Length: 277
Image (tube, rainbow, N blue to C red):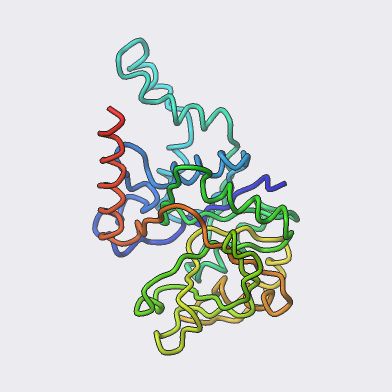
C-alpha cells in the first residue's frame, strides 16, 4: 500500500514573479482552488491520507490553507456561502498534514531527500503541484498505484513531447513491457538533454512512486544539471538495475509552472465548470 504522498513545495516560482514574491506558487488558483489542493485531492483519490509537504521560507499560506479557519467559518455559518468550504473541510477531516522545511534550494532530488523524515522506510508517492493532471476516469496517481502494485518498484509518469522541448524535462529510454498499457522498463534516464542528445521524446512529468531505497541513492548522488541534486540522476542509478518503470498515463497534464500552461489549465477547467452549470 502507498500511504503517504510527498509534495516538494519549497521552490521560489520565479516564472510567476512578482505574484510569487509573497504568495507560494503552489497556492496559485485554478478557478477557486489552489494548485496544491488539486494535488491533495488526487492523492486522496488513490487512497492516500498522509500528506507530507516540504516547504520553505514564505510558504506559511500552505499550512494555513490546510487548517481550520474558525473566524471565517463563524462569519459565513448559516449563509449561502457556507458550502464554499465543504471541499477543503473534507480534506482537512480525512487527511493528516505534516511539514518540514528545505533550508536551501538544491534541486528536486534534495527536496525529496529532505522529506525523508516525514516518509520513513516505506514506498511513497510524489506530486509536483504545478503539474496539474486531469483524467475523466481514474486520476493519474490512481493509475500509477495499480502499476506499482504489479511491479513493486519505482514508477514515473511520462508523456510524449515535442523533441525540441527535451531540454526542459527528464527523458527516459527503455523497453516496452506492456504495450496495452504503455508501460516501459526504463534502461536509461537523462536530465534535460538537448534535442540532439535526447534518447527519446518520452518525458517525465511531476508524478512519481518511489521506494525508500531512493533516499540512500540520493545521499550519494552528486550534483548534476544546474549544479543541483536531480531525482532523474538518482533514478537512473536504479534504472540500471531494472528497478524503474515508466508509465504513459491516461489523461491531460498542464504545466502550471509556466504562464502558457497555467492559462490553458484555467481555460480548460472554466469550460468544464460552465458545462456543469
